[in-house]
Image (cartoon, rainbow, N blue to C red; front, side, top):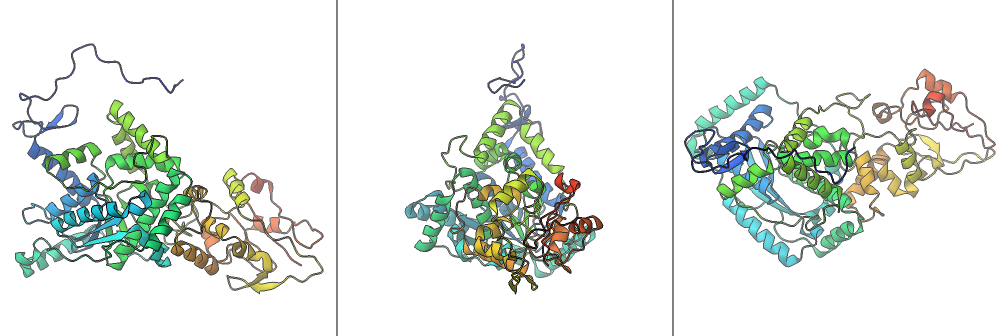
Length: 550
């Protein structure tokens, strides 16, 4: 049996330890230079060979996937940390004239100021912004500085998946490269040089006091550090996505390293996001439609990034995070990070093994969902919903149904049901839509995936949430009432749990088995049919609830 305190490291060999790099040892690549970096046991590189090795990894990831076309606008999400700073420097050197194989896209940089969420004072935030501006002016790319408080002024359209242009084939990519090279030679070399510094496009100052207070109130209301980190990541993604769409960027580059993605994979499993691992850790993330998130640093470990930044003086800006100075067991993110790094210190292949596992994950639509119409999406993370409705005959369904408010008691048989204009455009009983009107939390919770629902448990009230989230939740419920889908003939209710594609399309046809279940109601004194289920439905098959009226 495995014990917590056991040491599973292999016993030390009886012979002498392996020789450390010394002046007599040579670089494993060129066999001539003196080694300055040891990446793995026995892999000692000199300064020049290590740079070639590091740059080749970055270029190989971009060249292998071929998602970024020549002349395309790409937004670099820079946080000031080591990985994103190294990514920024790789793009800067790849666009220079001295590069053997120049990068062909048009870059821009965005920096999100998260000082209010981390409890920074206005003086510290101003000092950080000054350092950020100094680095961005040195780089020379168009840059955008946005504060996290700006999420309170985002439009609800941020949470909508826009139509994406069809992905080009390999022939289309080669044709785009040839066309770009012809334009390059026609315009001349002098106009294709390194981009000149431009003025910032976005708010460079501090936000208003009311927005800062609203953001602080939101994060102070969250109970656990795990939910705070997830909420911060969600709001940051929405803000960067809005900047990309506003300024015409079709790709967003993030600096997620191999080590960070390995930690993120294990953390996502613990948070119940296993259905979205291919999107959260893959090279490309197409969940937003018109803006694709790419991760070109996913082949580099944190050790390689740290050595490269040290040897070649890559500037970075330290910004405190939400979990800065937090103990190891303060959140699931911190616990998984400590677990992976501790294993990596004992077994050097831990990070690479977890990372290679994530590469084998395939992005596939959910069962019953077509490739073109993936069905309803989560309100926060914008992934396809991975849960059934609240009436699912599972433990999670029982847990969710306990959080949702119960419907109003049935009206008496002698009373005529009050009919109101249902949000789907058809007349229904009055209590059909009242659940959402009386409890806005239920309206939001039912539009979240499993992982986001778990995080929302640590938020007692939804009032501190940014207005665009609540507005989009209300708009979705008005566009399509979840309690009125599928009304045909005498059926004025809803068939729950019949698949996300069927639930998303108005008026689903009832299967023969479902109709047989619906024809066997048990009459009550109020003329309302009691929900009936077959044995297969009770065991987790097709949970069916139908309300029949006289």
